[in-house]
Length: 169
Image (tube, rainbow, N blue to C red; front, side, top):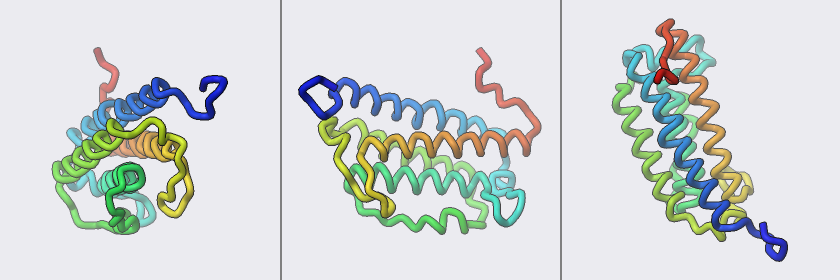
């Protein structure tokens, strides 16, 4: 922030948005893709117990959350999300279809973020019934994606008993 301004510089906002896009579309998505490669459709829908989520449910949830918070909340698209259905789904949707849906959502997220007016980063919005700034919405989606990516990695390791080789050179 400049001493005479109450808003962050455009450079800082653009760097924040670029980092969020990189994490979502490359870092986290890449890890999820690696996990999905190792699993069958049935494994993607396995759950430890009725109260736990499957990887399939988590993929639906990540798409729904990212769409609601960024595409709708910041981009202005109509919010048609039915959140509970993301967790209630029990049909074995093929892993390729789930991954394609997530990639499509992230492409829309990236479009909204790239076009986002940096002067509006502290503008308040109502998203999922909460009043948040645009900055908070972007941060929420990024950290939320990170958390569920970690769950997907853990479930994949449990199901395959293998090293996923994320950091092999």
